Length: 219
Image (tube, rainbow, N blue to C red; front, top):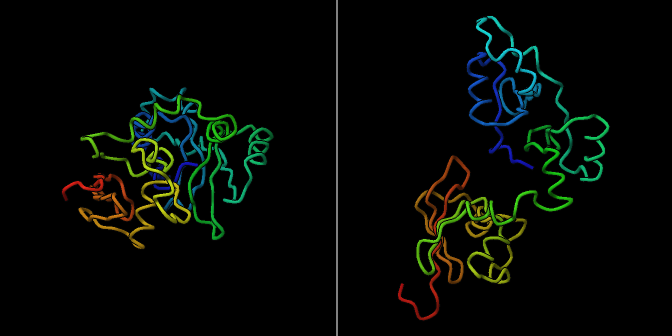
């Protein structure tokens, strides 16, 4: 699933030029369209439906007329059932909602296939773009990196992370350590691991540096 904060979407009242800008810059073939917020998704815009109108100079062109009906699924929907839904409905994207009807994110056919048969791309391709080693025991991480990959990259045993609750990513681990949202430039310590929050976007941890202080190392 692509988390809500990472979903690229278009506002229903955007102009034709604004909508095209989002499509071209994102490179996605299917984009959710919302009314007032992402909790009110009203359609899916398929880039292929726009092809006949790419060169349209009509300022009154209503791209909204091309919207397709969105398909909503609960967070609890099983992958096998969701795959069957996609097959029957001949769709490639669904909106995931919580028990209150709020949008949690989107799931695509590619997401499902990756879960069933493994990553379509080589598993190391994406991971290497999510961190940078800047010293013998120093790193900069995209906070979305999965904890399994974080441990593999740093050669840290998962057991040393302790009880991480439901955390699956580095950001989730830091939230468990802090018990609250950290602030930019805040340092969090877990054993030998010294995390420094480099970038926050509202309540989302974006970038984190790590320094591992081995036994006997100077602080």
